Image (cartoon, rainbow, N blue to C red; front, side):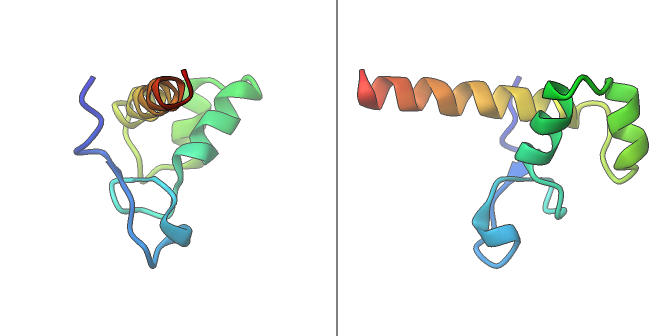
Length: 74
């Protein structure tokens, strides 16, 4: 999945953390909810500003970032 159109970082918003489509909802917020066992439906209910495609975009971003870190440190 190409997450680049959905995950943005702006210096003045949430300290430059990666957010969903310029909103104040961070990738970390979504990943943390998934780790806690929340379903996609529950996340969408908690954050009605996002849509179903934003959740896999967060996962793709996190996976890509992990790959980048592994290649730098590997």
